[in-house]
Length: 164
Length: 186
Image (tube, helix red, strand yellow):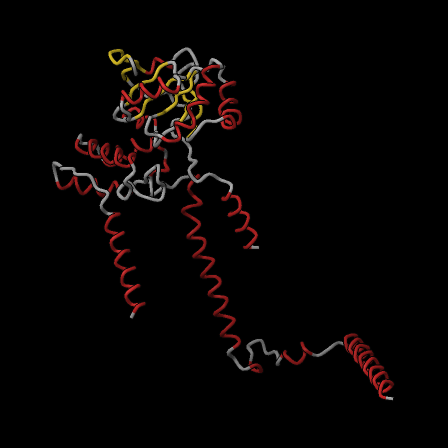
């Protein structure tokens, strides 16, 4: 009896992602920020960027190996007309610009978070991370790790359709 | 001798490893010893969100370094410990606390150990009671019952009959065998 209960409990644990954790920012507004835009550094944008139109907020960096894998799929999403805002997280500006030049730029624009302050306010602890933000600037979903066809279809798309 | 050397080397390596864990420390100068003390207490009590089995003090991951820097800044800004913990919980969730608060969702965490201790004491008590019972001579048991061993092993009439049939069968097959073997001999 005890064995059965334990076995069920442990089996259940096997199927869970140990890294998955509830985001503290779900259903809360995008944090206040004022940061420069990659490629147009004299211009700075604020959280108002997320008002009026739904967007994906994608945390990326050139030092992030998984971002390299994710990038082609982001390009694909952008081609479908999905608005993606990039958060260039603790990166080198020149390297970041070269990356977008070489691999294509899926972002409506990329915000430079050189010191990771914005990332900290978002509860970012690595890259890539992708947030679904609705037209009121409220975070509706957070995905940690690479967004690919399957993640998009199963996790992000349902939320995305809901906020249209 | 060889084994002693191997074990010795292993222990030394383990010690070296332990030393490097503690080495995840940034160079920070605090304006007071009290702040230094609180800093060390905080980073030992908060979990690194990226490497979930380590505290902020143990981890060398970039995010842990950032968070240590942030805690340092907030301490120097004169923030209280609870303001700092709230700041992190706001962003990373209650998950960052190694000592979770008591509330409905964490009740199971707090109560399970207590429950297990109670169950453990219960089992111990039963085992103890059974042992002290067994230790007593059979015919002076407190309930006055005589040795039950004999009676429980005695067979009922029906069981006796079954036994007889079984015995009878095997005797018969035994004698069959004898006949057969005898036949071969002949």
